[in-house]
Length: 269
Image (cartoon, rainbow, N blue to C red):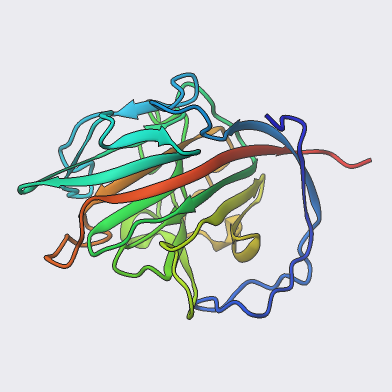
């Protein structure tokens, strides 16, 4: 579907948006033309397309003291009504959810990576749209690199974060920036989260508004964003980044994904 779509992004001047901690200077934003090369529109009901997505299964905290066990059960992950739905479920003192990835199925260096998502909410809810370096098996994290296109604490439903991790700037020392609204929330409607990534930059966008650019000079360690990465979608429960659910956290909580699309840049004559 729409396999020949070109995405053209130029300078956007939107004044009605409040951006936490300021925004990047958009006056010199380069015009780029992108060719769509991969997409999932989530139009076929049932399990996610296994030619595009693989499931992570299990618990154990996932390196962040998370509480959930990931499954591929329909109560945790399903395509229905034109969207991918990842749902965190509570059963007694246990939690289940889902995490899917394109590892081994689709991996790309550079271009534009985007997803239209409506987020869940509540203390201790931690959804994300992110990427890891495809060489992670031989080049363990953080050396493989990580790009968090969208990361979100459910207790702050009007704020998201864009982040990179690498050697010398991982975990609590990562390079990150927040983007938020004063008058609306990310759990009430779909928003477009994207990065545009080149040989010496990573730019973070919400609804095509640039709010952060990272260059090699901005890092406190090695630039490791020069090879293919794969994409991940998940909803975690609890963990070091977000804290833990409280009695005020409603369950179940669902992240809705309308589509995921990836583009490569088209060279201009």
